[in-house]
Length: 277
Image (cartoon, rainbow, N blue to C red; front, top):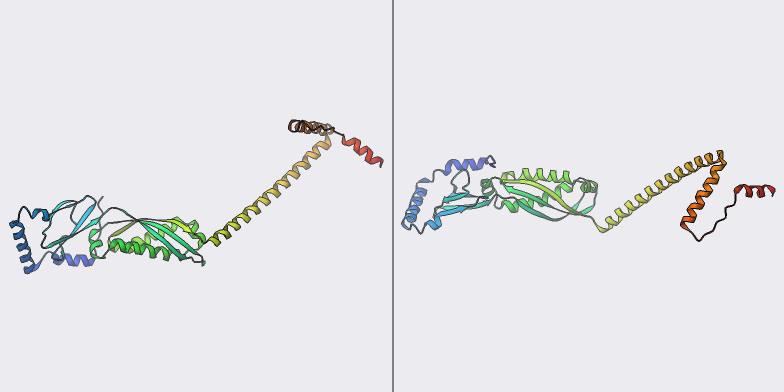
């Protein structure tokens, strides 16, 4: 996959004059080539350089960039007296952001860490525009994490991690584009809350669960009372249904507790004695 990148204006301005080394520069280059040919084939061990498939080499000749695009992969010729090159790794790099103490928008102190995946998409910019592109990207990732999370509330931080990661990726990618860095992905790994806040949130959640349980139990009692009322009306219309219910209750008790002996007493008999009093 080939990525087309616009080189910065400063780099283009340098390239217009990089082709002309000047009279003195050409003299040095030709003299060095004479020594290379004089010491051939021993000098070939210093002149031939190998660049891996995942690497590119930015070549400088007498301090100037030799070409608009980097060298590699494969073999290329280097004059050891006048040329100097810098290898750049194009593979994706993962960086663990160390835990950052952050004060959220609602004044809650939390510790947040994450991971950033990035790669070099333009070796020329990563060498010429910044001294250490990897170190600069890592420092910028830490400050961006603190700045973005400082504008979020605790509830947003706990529930909208994907949105925060997307915002961080866009901000980092825009800032590191001039360094030749492409930020591919940003993820929030862990959010550590203070122990007192954890206990307070746990107590709040427990109280909320207990309140919901009481409401559900009350609704169950209300539904049960309505069902009992309807059952009582049905049994009042049919006296035989009450006797059948007695027999069902005796059958259930006999199955569970065989050592218990129950003598059912009809309610009508008790009602007769109560009326006599």
